[in-house]
Length: 302
Image 1 (cartoon, rainbow, N blue to C red):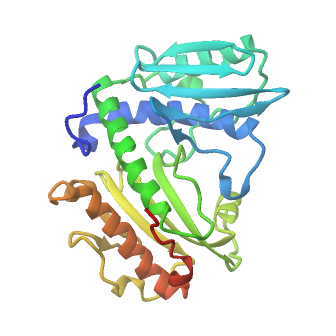
Image 2 (cartoon, rainbow, N blue to C red):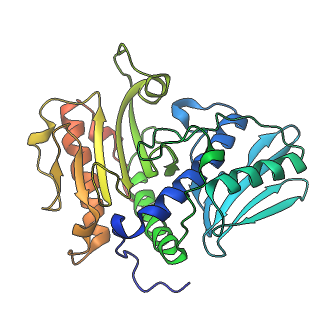
């Protein structure tokens, strides 16, 4: 793969079918990690991480060994490796989500790894099936679109890692959640968040403490193009009056700061534009959440 543009265009309408397929594959493997990995706070035990070739679960403890599952977007192959030296590989593309699901669990069985998941797509409104084994119609896999997606994630992971290094408080790793298929990073003030009635177990664990979250997602039926986002929880009053950078960034009606991906490509320095958005949204939200941003600031010693 040759990099001609670190910020390539990727319009949702052009790869929506492929996006649905890879999202469902990520959910299958993500649910396996969720079932096997010891629980961590704020669901840190469930996402994927960027690797030099794709997306990885990282090492997962199992019995007296380790299992790692890896989507290789250079060779377009899914691998499962164990610390005993076993490796099994499944080509990406050329089969349906249902066939991938059956193959993954057959290979896990061959590796003597017993795992049970809820085999249903999670919170994807446009996928109306009750079992991964029913996803026969989801089989699109355009390698060029996958490689473009991968290049975007590689570039943005580096930008997010740089932004993460400016904060001295508790922070998540930069990771990709298979729930909404977004690359995300969250900062914490250390203060518990007020309890809310009627929220799900997922929300209760994710928002047990005050947070300011940042991320990037490829678009969905609500915002049909890739975009960056930032928001605080609890949602602070007055943050929407704060100025965001760069100029095309805006606050939505729910108090989420948003910057459309295509707008950064009109900038002379897209990387700087993203960092400006992350920093301006952080300061705007933090000011109204009464965070001591000076105390959390980590100076660059390079």
